[in-house]
Length: 103
Ligand SMILES: [Zn+2]
Image (tube, rainbow, N blue to C red; front, side):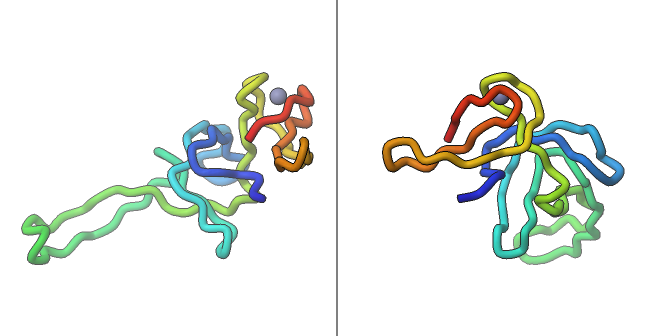
């Protein structure tokens, strides 16, 4: 069970993008990192390949440590620490702000 899931809205706690809110595009639990929309943009120099004829500079999201993200509760819309609960055999996340459970 993960505290941060793909599709979550999260707030960034550290780095240049501190305070920014974005949607999680991907989570890499084995690395403890996630990619968040429009957060921690990095510049890559793209060389021309057969598929991509135009070389140049592209911007894309870099990964962020999961510990630097706070999930925004879908119930109360506040960034919150997450707990876990088991409701009739289903594991849910619990907002520590408002106490609501969500998937
Ligand atoms: Zn809440």
